[in-house]
Image 1 (cartoon, rainbow, N blue to C red):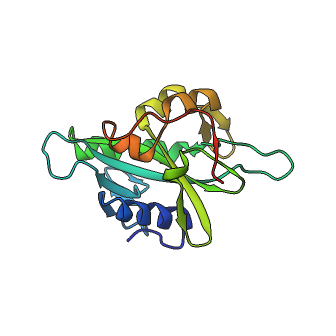
Image 2 (image 1 turned 30 degrees about the vertical axis):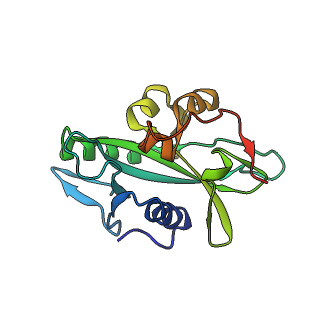
Image 3 (image 1 turned 120 degrees about the horizontal axis):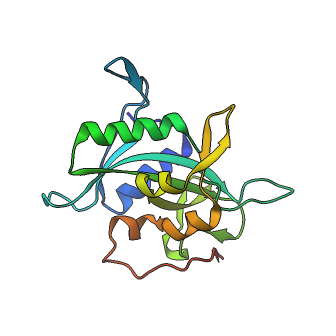
Length: 188
């Protein structure tokens, strides 16, 4: 069962349902035991192409962030992750095999009049609005840099993240949508 107390994951699940994208929400209550250790559970298994055998299935870890975060000094495009999350996601991809790939989905809760996605892709959920952006694990890992040794976190430089990440629908259905603008745009 997905962590429905986490509004970012609940919003992402509602978005997948609205867009009729096939998915399985993963039970996150316990870490999986593998070999001599354990893995953090991924959040969702997503199959945007339906049942076609050549379609990639996605192992997804959702990262909830505010857009922007901070009050005095707003910061856009925060994209940090823990090293454990990334190691676990990479291992899950290895366990699932070649028809699966791994991605991070940044579920941005919009806190101002800007969005990381086009206005038509802004998703209302509860009392908030969300913009969903995805990036492959490989793209993220290739540009991630240490953020905090104490908290074992990494982050991509904002310019690189914006260059490589895509709005969720473009990421899952690249031929069905026009390219998105790279500048944050007003939602109102």
